[in-house]
Image (cartoon, rainbow, N blue to C red; front, side, top):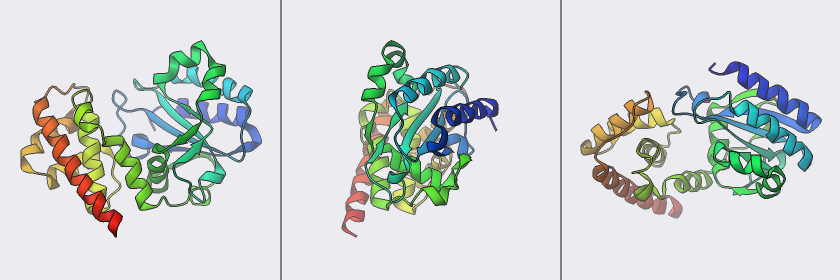
Length: 258
């Protein structure tokens, strides 16, 4: 596995700080789905705990985690800590105890106390993360996935992945690879009930979406699997986003009436 030493260090660090309250540590995202690219992917991790942990533990966790993040891929590591009681039975939106993403590094460095006080609440993204864990997740430590996680209801999963793409009309010009492949992933689930990685979703899109977008999707795929930047026709990309969002909205309405 890529970054195995780093993952082992993370697991040992988490066990040391959280101790007996630790239920399990789970790998999800592109690495678990076998489409990891060290230049384009982050490492997605989820920690489940039996009960809340103190702020002093969170601060120590972040202090060590920031150092580990420096050893990671270009996009870094992303992690959420969640109480077991919200995993099974599943609660949506899902409460979380702590979240880390590299976008918050400066905040953590400047004021870790304020960060741990603020970085807790509800996160709709966790429904998608739990779904990937149920389908593809890897146990790094602790209890088996089926003992900890309940299947995420379809309506909650759809709402979660919809939140990730609903701004695609504007965001596709800034992050064309991410948005094109994610739109394909949402459509693959809504149309064919498939739980796909970005890479597999792009391949599905080339086979199932209108021919006029095949080159655009193929370029997104090529760039995702390599270190290339995507510099395609952004007007066509916006057209793709608008057309796919319209299809998704229609399908969501149909599914909500079922």
